[in-house]
Structures are given as structure tokens and as C-alpha cells.
Length: 129
Image (cartoon, rainbow, N blue to C red; front, top):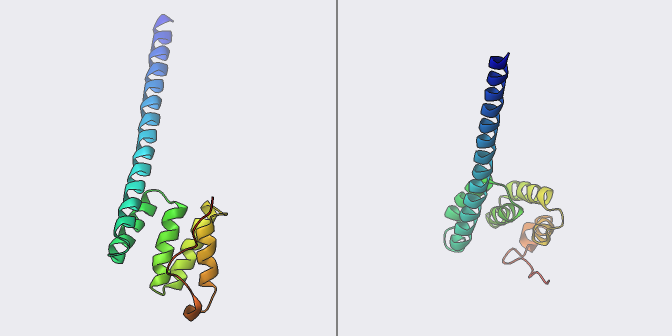
């Protein structure tokens, strides 16, 4: 009988240890993905004005690592600047799904509804807090 209790106790302890290790790894992995996505996003912002293709690639990687309304906005904006309206609208929709009240996404959505020759895509309106 004592052997069964010992085996049960060892099995329970082993399960707790494995579950604890897995949970910690997932948390750290999630944190890594978040940090990596943030770094990719910031790197894209640094080069957006001089290397749109490079910025687009970094934004793609950032969204793949961890989608954010900011990354969707900036990638959508780049798509809009390149007259890729379907892609821009898809990014606006994805960004608004994450943050429905985001003003920059609403601005871009409104601009994309205008005829292409009437859009003012040079700069989103300044946020007032």
C-alpha cells in the first residue's frame, strides 16, 4: 500500500513540475514574442521614411510575432500610399478589431473611402490628449 502512495506522490510531483516548467516557458515565450514584435515595429518606424519595402517587411514580421493595432495601422498606411487599397482596408479592419476606437485607424478608414485623387495620406491627424 505504501508503495502505491509513494508512486502516486511521485507522479503528482512530477506532473506539477512539468506543468510549472511548461507554464513558465509559455509565459517567457509570450514575453519574447511581445518584445520581438515591439522591436520589429520600432525598427520599421525608424526606416519607414527612407525604406518603405524594408519597413513593410519588418511590419509583416511584427504582426506575425504579435498583432497590434499600431502595426496594422502603419502597414495599412504604407499599403494606401502604394495604392494597394484592398490590403490597406484589410489592415484597417484587423486593427479596428483589436482597438475599435483607435483614431488613426478611423482616419485611414475614412481616407480610403474617398476617391484616390482626393485622399490626404501624407500624415494622420495629430492626437490631442
